[in-house]
Length: 100
Image 1: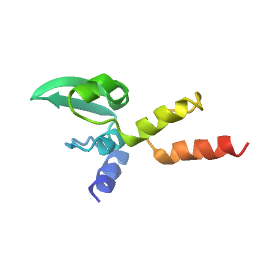
Image 2 (image 1 turned 45 degrees about the vertical axis):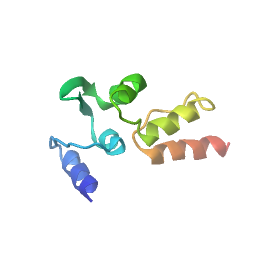
Image 3 (image 1 turned 135 degrees about the vertical axis):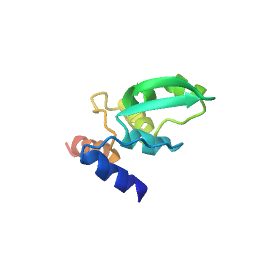
């Protein structure tokens, strides 16, 4: 898949410019994100910061990635759950916490 190929390039240390409307892909693949709204830059910075600014994300008609939404719900019961771009890490955290 294209995501796998992009991930391989990133792991090799290459800079990749990736244009997408898929916010799950954007979150998973990017360290830095530039968001446009009607042709104007409305955000330029760490993708983590962008997606944690839910009012801005919603204002420009985008959706919060599933991993962030899932973690936000889990924070109510597990306030120490770490931030992660990887859903598997969140599941691993839960499995460890629930097995005790």
